[in-house]
Length: 139
Image (cartoon, rainbow, N blue to C red):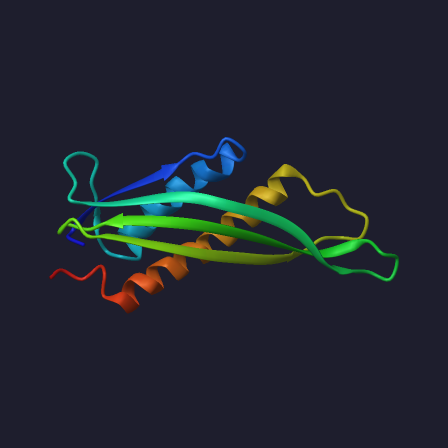
């Protein structure tokens, strides 16, 4: 992939706050997880991230029928053009389960935190696939 990578994220009209977080997360991951430098102009390697979908689903209920455990699921698509011009396309998902008190309100902040954690999980899976494929080693 080379040592300099440009990471781009297509901002979702449905979830702009969440996809802005995804931009920060991918930049951080390129530097900390891959050990590569971020590049902004004339980059040979480009990672395009598209937030395909996300969902929040109750998965466990208390004895009164109130949801007490939820699962946030995030699906992302990554299109990676490496320094040799090869295009690789990956689809990954991440999830995060979290508990709330019975009869409590799910605030936007709680949902955003769950989205962040599920997104980080998805990005970790993406980088695991890149490692397995040998995609980020210099050729």
